[in-house]
Length: 259
Ligand code: ADP
Image 1 (spheres, rainbow, N blue to C red):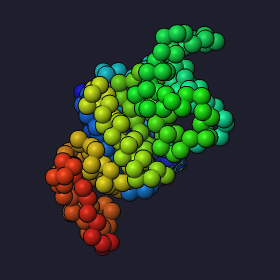
Image 2: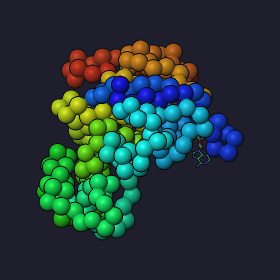
Image 3: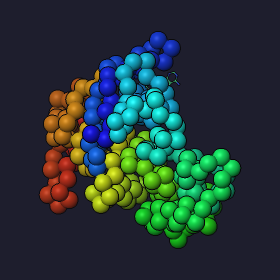
Image 4: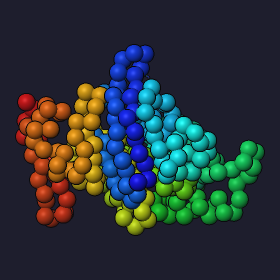
């Protein structure tokens, strides 16, 4: 197991958000963390990356409790692609990706040729190398998201955590971004954890998923075992079915109506 979440609980000023959340993540899998808005997904992701400390429980990554290692050690293991990354400065795409190397540099150390090589390789993987000199505020939403993923890759992590990776993207860019991270899992053994409220996206791309409801894990496992009509009714208040689409070889969710 590359990551163990051991009985994590959390509250904001006494208001419970997560209670005894426990699950394990295998190396190279794409895991979806699904739940309605406000169910605690972003909070969980912040705990997984030690931006927040749990009130109880622990997060263990590659056999290390993240409470006991440095921020730098964490950054070399996992990278976060935050929600709808707004960057208002006119940094170039290459500058943004170079920021992914910062956790690996000593204080005041300049980047080396090796850092620049990693930046270039990361931009090639996410197909933004042709935009290297373009200011980030002059690229499309899909290109910006691919730049942020390149920044994450430049950290050389084994795990990528993504918070609502397709928010504000057109549907073609949604597929492009998720095909990209799915490919990283299949081709490079990258572990990808996607936090989302989008049932179709999780059904289509994730090997496994956990479903959060009322501060707890309602169901966990394979997509077909978790996204049952009963669970979708209970958690999302919708009448829906999970179907397998032979044309794309993936699951899709058909929403019939609200309950
Ligand atoms: P999700 O990502 O599933 O939408 P969040 O983790 O963002 O859920 O939020 C879970 C709950 O915690 C929500 O009720 C939200 O209003 C509350 N919450 C989130 N952040 C804070 C905060 N900084 N202070 C107080 N309450 C918060």
